[in-house]
Amino acid sequence: MVMVVMDEKSVDAYAAHADGLVRFAAGLVGPSDAQDVLSDAMARLMSSRVWPEAENPKALMYRAVLSESRMFIRSRRRRLSREARTAVADAYEMPNIAPEVSRAVAGLSPQQRAVVFLTYWDDLDSASVATLLGVSEGTVRKQLARARDRLRRVLG
Amino acid sequence: MSVLDDQIREVVKTIAEAAPNPPVLDDDPIRTMPSTRRIGGPVMAIVSFAVVIGVFVGAGFLFGGQDQTPATDATQPPSPDTTQPSTTDSTYPVEVVQFAEASGLSLAEAAEILEGQMSQNEGYERLLGLVGEGIIVEAAFHDDYARADELTVFVVDEPAVALVEDRLAEAGLDPAKTTVEVAPETPPEDPFDWLDAEPFLGHDWLDSPGPHIWGAWQLVESNSASLQVPVLAGFGTRWSVEACPTWLGDLLTSADGSVTVTVYEDSLDCGEATETVEELIVDVVVENEGDFEVGFQNGVMTWTGAVGSDLAWRMDDSINSGPPVYPPNRSEALDAWAGSPAPDMEGTWHLLQVGPEEPAAPVSLEVGVSTMGFDGLCNDLQGLFAISTDNQLAMSLASTDMACFDATGDVEAQLDQTLGESGYMLRISVEDDVMTWSSQAGPQVVWSR
Image 1 (spheres, chains in turn orange, cyan):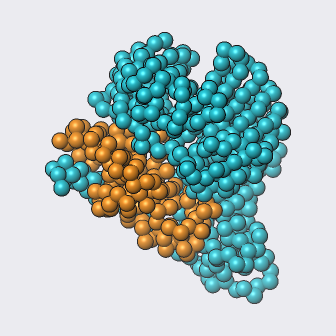
Image 2 (tube, chains in turn brown, red; image 1 turned 90 degrees about the horizontal axis):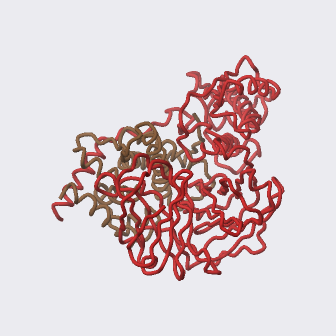
Image 3 (cartoon, one colour; image 1 turned 60 degrees about the horizontal axis):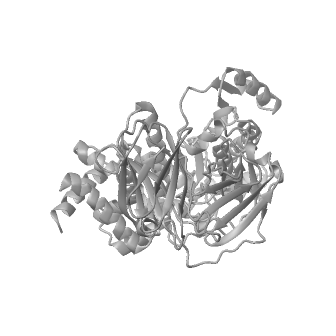
């Protein structure tokens, strides 16, 4: 285990957004792995040299969680593929959600999950999501449209 | 608000409400963020080492940074006795006194922690050489700094146990405090771990000052000699917010014996990456004369070298033209899936090359396997663009990042309009096999092998 320095600024920033970040992580990788992903993301971020000069710490933290989630999901897919030797999608742990819906969510890319989560949980508009994730507003709209299209197949 | 929106909102709400509490910082003067990352091969060893270094640098102890924010260092849970430090105690080095002041620990506690950190720091340095030989699968020091010099190492096989034990002892690590075991037989879970396996053993990481990296990276290697074995090349920044693990590479040997390696990776949002640039080349490359060209956006950085660690980063031709940049935004262009029945697809896929005949603009491509009625699997093999000046290899990418075992569904390629309207070709390898998948125009994709 690696421990990472957190100065007071980091502590304050983390405290201000920890609840939102862990929910965001849960939306990306599932509740059971959310803590680990968040920890690793923050460890990576707060050890970086860009962190002390961050103009928008909240955005950096959300992007760090998204980045960490990407790596986590890839790793999990490979592991599951090898273990199961079967074509399974990302085993996204989804309590109280129908299996077909879980699979549909698992089929979303991390970016799509991020956009869906920020849109439907945090009630952010496309511009705000774009700012937070550091992408264009058009990208957000397209990601959201594609995600909705996929989810419609099982929810609609 | 549509019914679908309501349904999605309900699903998201269920997920969000199932989220655990966020990781809690220790409620004491030492605030730490635990990470689950461990050493897992050369890269991770470097990263972990960097973290350890970062502890010291961040605290300003090694460099005596008077103007740095007092760090609240990273260590084990503190002892209940948090006696206020005495800054007048001259029996302790100044760094210990500073640390004690910043953390609220007693001088004795601060000294113990710093000593443990330094011990680990030195230990990591000693470990790096062994990791580089590819015989260590994983290693970690005890995370309690009171026991910081205790080390557990997992190695590749039984013969490596004795070897590593000897090397650890030679390196000055206390044999009584080291445990060396054969690693459980678990497959690599991280791309970096693959570097510990054939044919990627024995590679070197090379450092050199990096330029300001902004945009998408592309590494193109050309070699006068014909290479018949896979090549892996990579580069990335040592330590940034995204870590910029832009390292993937693969082999493409053309009929004339030249080799082109093009690297592309989708985590390219390295706009803040001003740290050193590292290049990773396997032996098979460095044993041959070779030129390496690294390009990003429409600029080109040339990186040349002949042998091993003499490879040098040359920035003479470095151009970062700035906007208009072509971000690897796969969602901007993808609009259609073209499917084709897949033959036996078991194995790991490598998308080797994609090239439109008349490159005109950045294009996107995504390849995946549909096995569950939707595009849910393996669709993270995504790559885009690249504009060449000679129109010979306008778009290409390589990836080892997609494992599609037992994929019996359709093979699908998702192409953007720009590419779809042009002629193009794809080359995909499945393990040792090579399949050619081509189309002349539009979304029609023909699979052949």
